[in-house]
Image (cartoon, rainbow over all chains, first blue to last red; front, side, top):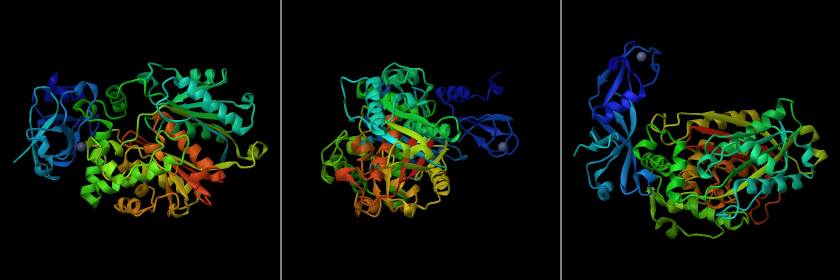
Length: 128
Length: 384
Ligand SMILES: [Zn+2]
């Protein structure tokens, strides 16, 4: 059953469907993303899926100029580490702005919002 | 603990078109056996560091293959994989096998043949050292992971691109003095700063090259070492730690926690402090990695690694010589070979045989070998 499937594959499938969800620990309320078998705070393995707000802030980023083979043709693109409002950190594409202006536009700590991507790649865009 | 290095061997590093990994490995072993002045029959077991011949050469089962071509067929022979720290993982297990009392003499080697593939496929192969589900899948590359560390270090401490470039200039100078180095040319700051971007803020000269190469060590029980050599080098600490493979789940983006843990354990085991280390071969897969290494190892305070290299404190004749071999940056980085090559350089330095790049009066040396973006850290300390 979808509701009982707390797997990494289910998490990634939600993202490919344009939904950002996390696991809420029944033991302590901690939000977990990506899924782990046990809550890192209290050790419980009782969860439920919850919708995440999609709000995050930028911790660091890079501009990829030399890509892996399968992303050839997409350069330059931005990869960053974001911290979700609910706590977890994720690595994601930062999209929705002119990459050549990244020094002016992207600021460490700035607010971002989850942006569903057609390719199913986890993406956030700056809130500007 | 004490195990002795009684022989070392290393091939030329670089784009060695006509050589396969097995030929490189055999060459390094031949040098090491000659250097130790032992018969191959005295070697009891073989430990091979290799990251991914699977992807680079479509070749698995590297342990026995390397042993066979090196004239050591019949011995126990196993390959160790810990991404870019594969070499030090092999070394550590060679050490442990002697300390267990099982063997008196073993061979540790490291090898990687990377240049058969075009750059885009090498980039793909190296990215398997990151978390495939959450990092590689979104298009993050290995330089990209270190670029994000560099950006975070710049934000936290004001580290500059000029300071990163100073690492490249220093290591190219040292490589210029090392006949086995991949690059034997000096560069200046402008050249480093104006090179094409690989993963902003890291440019071409912030990255170690794609290299072929092999290295080997003959290890012996401490109490028999002097039967073979007048200049044994003793390994007085071996420490290893791990962290999340994914960078985004780490506690810190400006320091490698696994390296700090391994360093603390290594200093404890050796009974020495950071101040007593005369030279260190550290894992400068990217320039930022050398700066952070010198902070994680306690040579400089957090944030002071950048100014230190800019002021020349880490040159061969500086307060502490960092990467006198040229490091991964200029000597080259045949991934699974690197940890063994670092131990070869420290051994040569402690014997006083490093020629133009000799660190004068070197008594204690350290190697710092990192896997991926910091998920594996392995540190060894050596004394002459
Ligand atoms: Zn919990």
